[in-house]
Image (cartoon, rainbow, N blue to C red; front, side):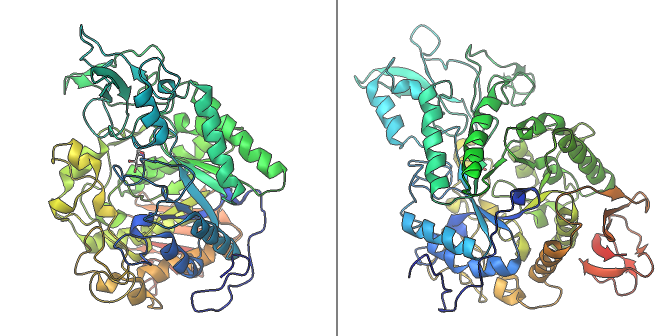
Length: 580
Ligand code: NOJ
């Protein structure tokens, strides 16, 4: 099979290519996140793979997304689910080959679907040959200077160089044994010890990542999602952080002036990457884009990452973290839109990803948001906070109803939007994974007190009425619940009112309606419990957060609704798109 003339797995030709180079495509794009390990397992070894991604492209095309973002597909020991990269320019043998990756990109493009991949620039895997060389070369070597090695404190250097904490728990420093067998220097790892941080003050690191970006752009990749885009720079004076009186440990807050997050000079890195993308665009090689992952608040701080000449888009996690409530949601929407307007960037809405509990589960609990304040959301201790909710009462039916309404709200807002795999099927968080199955480093680093993020990474149910639900034929790497039969893509396909058909309908309308995607909104007052806005061209969106049903405007045509609106009223936790 050649990549020039793609055919479907049934041998039928794909529809004609739809990708034209619209230089603003990213301002409105709906991007579907593929977590490759859990998406589709074509070779039936229990782990998803690129061949499975290729097989499912027609499904994604039918869903109606504009692009996919593929979480890391690189060789990795999987100490952090692939965010510990051992080779930035190859594909994990568990997932397939570079040729298959090329085929995936070509076939996606043939369907008009663009492809973003994950760039993990803050850290690599401790198995990366450059880190292994740094260990072998010893203190003071140029190899070590590619990473952040320091001598320890105390007489024998046995204390970490600073009090900084790793995101996954414990110190952010790990001591090494030197080549001569003596206890030696410490290296920085803001995440797991298996993820040593690169030294971005070394121009060789700059050059290395430039070569990685060019490698993938040359292969036709349309852009990158930048992992922890706010963390590559550290304060070169290595100060201790303030101690949190509640814990006696360094604070986890990303305060302005933090020595490890959102440093004042981080934009130099972003601007350099943008210049590479602009160069490709100028050469007619397509519009390349970036989306930054940075849990930064308030939005006025976040949007510095998307000011002119920097990254184009950045996930808006304030909306993800916000509770299900009219006032809070409106507040987040207003703050987000206003902050993005200041820098001329489109907002990027996201309901979930592979790091947070599934949206159905979040909205099914009385506490559906995270510490929202008028200034924004405080993202520190997120995993801990969510962990505390596991096992507390939940109403999944309520969560599903709200998730449907949330999808229509997200997809109606100005800007781009991301859909996490399985959210279109209304999957819930799997909170009862057996402890022996858990693989998240958070579980290990918290000494088995915080379960971590595996519950949203359970392999996708495609068909059938029992595990592995067409994911493959082998036992999946994480066990699937026995009750997911009605949630498979096959079970929902063509069923009016199913979650999948709601997504298809909404994305279909969004793809056609001139008012949706990039642009602005205008609020319409329909009472404190209702979010009601218009987008021009007669498009209106209403979401009822209150208990009481709300009358729909007379004479309006229903484009899509998340629940039954045939009686002319909008019930609680329901959304509708109207043409008025
Ligand atoms: C953010 C990624 O989404 C998450 O999965 C990962 O653990 C951390 N960055 C570290 O790379």
